[in-house]
Amino acid sequence: MTRRTSCGASSEWEILLACAAPDSNPRSVPKQINKLIQSDELLCLAERHGVLPLLARRVEQSETLAALMSEETRGRLREKRRAQMLSTLSLTAKLFRLTERFEEAGIEAVVVKGPTLAVQAYGDASLRQYSDLDFVMPHEAVLRAMDVMRAAGFVTQISPQVAEAGRVPGQFLFLDGGRNLIVELHTERTLRYFPRPLPLNDFFARRVRIPLDGREVPVFSPEDTLSFICVHGSKHLWERLRWIADV
Image (cartoon, rainbow, N blue to C red; front, side, top):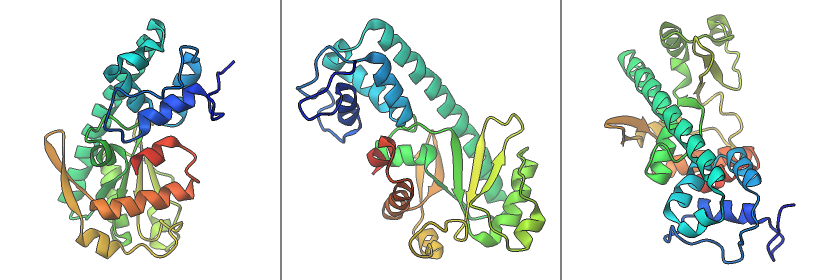
C-alpha cells in the first residue's frame, strides 16, 4: 500500500514534486519522506507524468533520495534513462534534417516543445520526455512543407487537395517510413484552441535561435514560448506534471 504523508499525498508523489521543482538545492528531499516508498509506483508515476529524466537526475545528485530506492529500482531507472537519452539523440538528428530541408525550401518554421523546450526550460535536451517533433509555420507554407515531408520519407493521410480546399485539421500529422516517429506541423489556423488568434507574424518577428548539440535551431522567444506552452497546458487541464515543470 502506498504510504501517505501528513498532507495526504503519497510519498511517491511528494518525491516527484521535489524532482520537478526548480529547486536551487538538488540534494533536498521532502523531510516527511521515509523508506517505505513503493518503487514501482514511483517509476510508473514518473513515466506517466513525463518527468522520468528529472527523477533520474535528482537520484544521481541526492544520496538521500537514492537511499530510498532499492538497487534494483535504481538499475531500472538507469536503463529507462539510458533509453530515453538514446531516443533524444535520434529525435534531435531527425529534427536537424527536417529543419535544414525547411530552410532549403524557404519555409519559415520554428521548433516547439520537444528537445528545444528541454533546452529552454532545463538547459539539457535530454531532461524532458518526448516522442515526437512539432513545428509551427505560416499556413501559407503548408503545401510546400507537405512536399518537403513526403520527400523526406514521411507519410500522411491528409491529401494536398484537402489543404488546397482550405479544410484544416487539428494538425498536419506525419509518420516516418518506420512509423515510429510522429511529426506535427502547426499553423495559425490549426492552433484553434488558443483563446484568440495566434499573432504568428509577431511571434516569428521575435524568434531566436538557440544552441542544440552544436547547432542552432529556430524557436520562439522565451516570452512567446511561455505563452505557447501555457495555452497548451491549459488545453490539457495541466494533467501532467511535465507541463507544469516546463513553466
